[in-house]
Image (cartoon, rainbow, N blue to C red):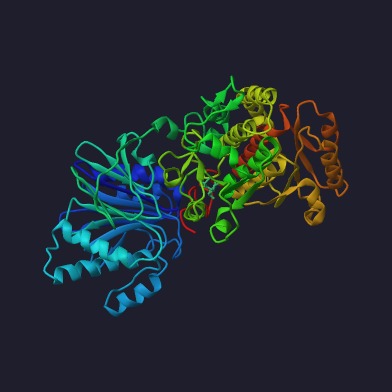
Length: 620
Ligand code: G6P
């Protein structure tokens, strides 16, 4: 939520700032703004709306200078408006900053600062931080410090941070210390890019791609002082830190739309490759199992595991549900899938044989991170299934498995789901082969997994047909998504995709459970999407479909190629290749992603930047 960028160097700052904000726009797009240091003051341009509106403003009112910060906002405190847009100013303009996070004690701090004469002009929690830094700067100066010294500014920021409760990623400019940018983090990610005679700052690595390959990820309670040619890291407890420089693995290709109109469509079509990448180097034919480089647990400990808790949010939680079925089936280990936002405040009994996996595309979701930390605090081995290399969750986990899905830019997750399900299948195979799963069964799973990229390529051939179906139903105001067993999580995911990007009310349910409530919604205007490939209880799902048809509800079915039974019953059928039951989510999710995409397009919605949502939810 909210994206931050910063630049100090010899070049015009606005180029990087705007490009960086474009790349971070998925983190929030209620408003955007930049501040650039000029000779006597810090100039600010900010505006409600998208980054391109800010870019237009910056063309109309050019803003020169080589040191600057920028922000794209997902509103938490204060409505989206020009005045609430970041950057915010502290004191009389001597401090200008941008913030990602939530300041929980902003109310009491604001009262204290008001009594001291500070004037508040916005409804944000961030303005409190700006005035607080200005206040401490003034205090330092009163004690004789030089306001043009970097050290004075560092002390002022440190003093302000000590008084904040909540989370922050901050980038601060000081009017009287040109060329110095101070960044600090607690709970909201920040990464510094090291260039030649220049430094970059960003909320994640995507803005840095193409600018530098050397990055330093800030940790909680770290403060960075950036100038063109120096980077100083300070920790709240330990003084000066030596920056640990990592090499960035992303490429600009990841961020290119190529032949596609939207990132979501591009990412849907990348899924065959996503599966290939998630499998690469992880299939062990000799042992008929999977292998992972980073679990950091020895075989003996892994064999002792008698319970697995998967925790996640959103689409990642749906992937976790598929994982539950896979792990229980192959490894016979009891699994629970917990919403991270619940787990973080619950206190379930967890033994030392419980393994915890946080599943997350971004590696920055605040609830998932907090749930993982809570489990870690209690001494449990806590691992991550994560896409973004170097993200907070990836770094804090005891071990884990990367998705290698490349950047996912569309706010509605698609290829990350596919990668997560692939990795969870590998994990189930791995844990299963340590227990009851036979060698031939392991071999069969491996060969079926190898076939999946081609099965997905074939699945994608339904694109045109899905587009036509979308045309027929895009006016509906309610949709039901129904599936059973492995396809129940797919139904949930299909409904979520539609809700997220088309704003149509959609509910996912186990197909049989719809009799206990949702069936009351069924009428001629409420389509039901049945995910009904051949499975053990296929006839039961057909009966559920009959129940909907008997109430004149339109039925769209996702079924296996050549399924005439479904064709007779459903109004529209989308065919997917036949695969083993446990692999079905990988193919059945695809038409539902495409359906949501085309319905949203037909309704004139912004598929890559749906209203009110953000790709990475870094606030509670
Ligand atoms: C947000 C995104 C979803 C995503 C969820 C969890 O809600 O819009 O697409 O599934 O966060 O994100 P994570 O990065 O932890 O997988």
